[in-house]
Image 1 (cartoon, rainbow, N blue to C red):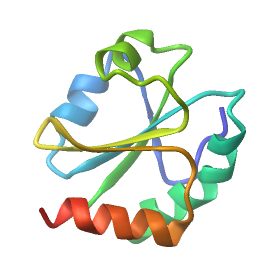
Image 2: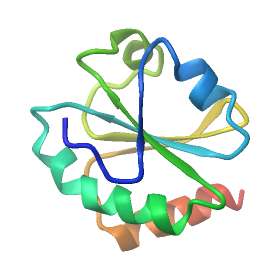
Image 3: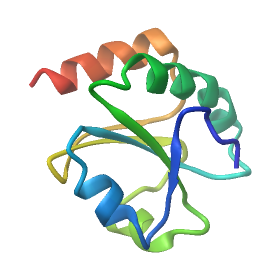
Image 4: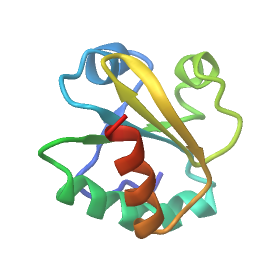
Length: 112
């Protein structure tokens, strides 16, 4: 799996603590080693993780190695980005996107 710099890896075992119990909103990328668009998204996520570190945590979860969480949230495609706030998913975005587009979508979701 291409790991985006500045992000943490989460698993089925620590998803509840790391994501659902987080104080800040958490952007989760559901990803896989074989996913080309996920590799394209890695530098975008690295930049977002650095720029938004004060108000947002960015993590990645490998869908192949963590089927429980993947199924629980109905993830059918990679990359899927899911934004969690106070333990609940508040936005779901499927597919790679530019940094500009992702910033716009996150801003809208975080200000609701």
